Amino acid sequence: MGEGNWQATTGDAALPFRRAGTHTGRAQLMTLGIAIFVAVGMAFFLLKSRIQYLSLPNLPKNTAHPATNVTVVIPARNEERNIARVVEAFLASR
View 1 (cartoon, rainbow, N blue to C red):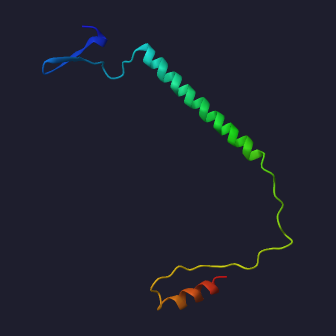
View 2: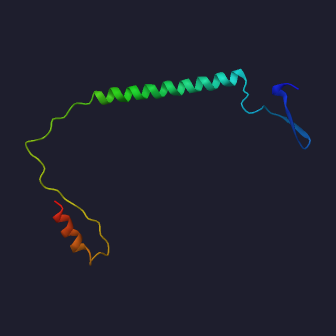
View 3: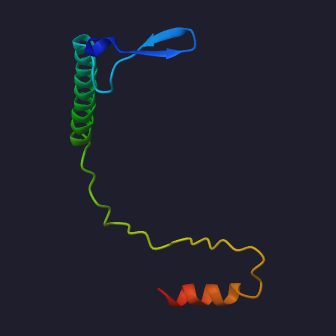
């Protein structure tokens, strides 16, 4: 009995199967080719996105008009008893 010719019987039919870990040379080559294709594709998109990132312009900081007004939204529902304490604690934190 050869390594790749093992047989298992199920009812009337005999099904050939291989031991785990044994592949034909063609299947191994195909798997390697797919892995290399995926790796090259990932490297291409990584390089492309890095080049795009480096081509972005550096924006100067806006020091002439600093933002002084800030709006804060405190989500609250059915908090009539606690909302005053929450707002006071927020105002005290600045």
